[in-house]
Length: 174
Ligand SMILES: [Zn+2]
Picture 1: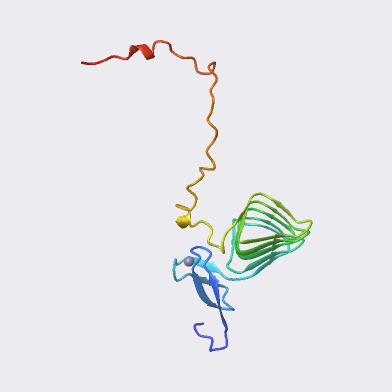
Picture 2: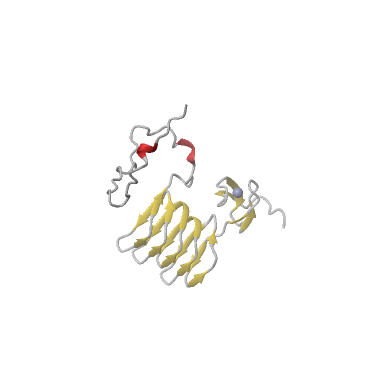
């Protein structure tokens, strides 16, 4: 099962583990990433029923239909939710919550669409094109404001009783 002539068109997917591009045939169901050697599933999934697994990860697309109920962390190229997803979601492209859809969990994706009636219970992080956590350029960009410095805490005198003798007992060595 090595070669399938010339008629299998190729597509490029991004490795869900290392984010690097992989050329696969459109029929490829799974492949070992040539970059990181991990197995990458390329299938598209349509989930129509209860589905509780350890994780769902594919570099294809996932659709959770109205009666679909996924309890798992999801990683995918894109995700469309018409049913219920309980678990964190990481998508490289778009997460779309339809009017009947609910995600309970954190969502990380460059594009998030929530239709009227769709619910997202969790935090969302809009990333740039799948490259979520690259700490490269955060350094010098905003030095002006240490925006998140907390206000100076005032401690009431009652909370920390002073020991009166401490100050005076400074010894001078000669
Ligand atoms: Zn990889």
